[in-house]
Image (tube, rainbow, N blue to C red; front, side, top):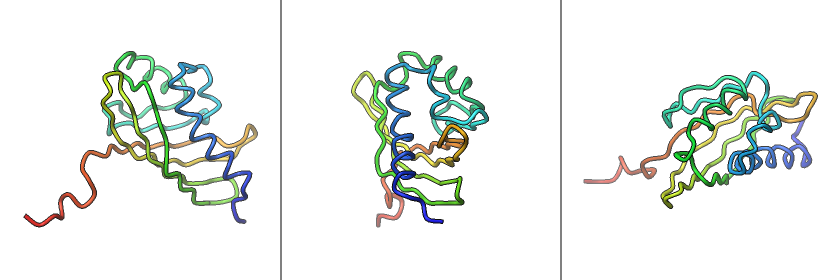
Length: 138
């Protein structure tokens, strides 16, 4: 089955909602984003692997003023795995209070359940060098 337009829109909005909820401090709504058993791997950013929305909430809360003030997502690409599973790749830009920023890659497994689409696995990879930087002639 091909992933329909309505599902693509719902998944894209789900991915975008993450930044709005976190940036607005609406951490009590993380269950709208994640499955109950989500594994959120932010090891590349020094936060380890979190299990469940409560652990994600605790980590974001612990970051306090050291967390980004703005999460921006772009370049969303969806690949259907099955009728009820989609892989999503997207890029994230985090803006800090001092104006500096960083770039990450989100790799998500998104599943459809009774409450709609939710992220069940998220892995964040930090982007710290330009692509091809190690392949430039000396």
